[in-house]
Length: 320
Ligand code: DP6
Image 1 (cartoon, rainbow, N blue to C red):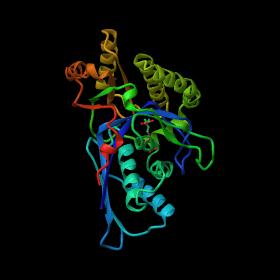
Image 2 (image 1 turned 90 degrees about the vertical axis):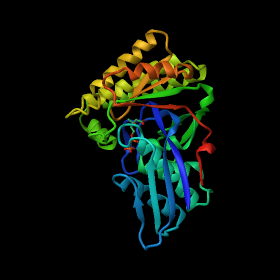
Image 3 (image 1 turned 30 degrees about the vertical axis):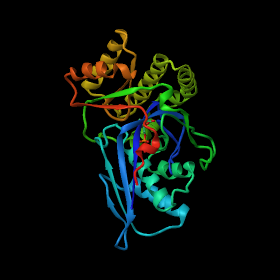
Image 4 (image 1 turned 135 degrees about the horizontal axis):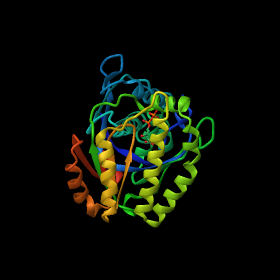
């Protein structure tokens, strides 16, 4: 039996569109931070029956795509028993599909491939479950390169910096912990088909990515935050202009955005980002985590707070 954990990741420069739906190849590159304690755990063992047994929350189709790809590459078709547990709310824009698909792909690489499978190949399996999951395969600041190859041979994931390069803490303002009303795959497609600013969002990707990478090299949290916030709001603008609009924001979302701006105006180095859900992720310098978390607790529109810090070494997360 193999048990593997993988953390969630949060994009600072977002992936919001595909150049190939079947292969789940992104239109543009994205940059993220891999977290530590918001994790999923995948367990893989041989099934005693003649069919696969699944013990996972929700629809197994994403996981089945990951398993099919691993089996195809490794030629091992034993029936398996697979369970995946998320140690944080699922489906609420906290990237549970990223951590769960990464955990599953890693567990399969160890169980079926005896740990000999190269990272980029594991990423290919994981990507078929959920694009953003490939960024959870590495710690720290991670770049997922879109590439141009039709088969995705140059669609690679790599670490830009270890977490220690620019340590950050995360406070998640949980506005709603229920599954989102429309999943990211469907929402992306609606945006592609109907949002007049979908192309514009992808055209700004190069500039945003460059600015974010330069800010990271300089260790400049405020510049990194400025571009991350702008990129996030640009993605949500794309959604708001879709027909019908994809609007994940709730009153608590606006409160948390306003709070982040207020804290920053008061000298707290912090910035927000928001994914396919109403919850607001506030990143800050670790020494300000308590200040940020106290301020968030006072917001009326929240159902809770989650806290994490950036980057244990990845080995610490792997348990067999
Ligand atoms: C808003 O990776 O969930 O979190 O590849 O269709 O499974 P699929 O989409 P998914 O999309 C993540 C979108 C996002 C932005 C990001 O993480 O880059």
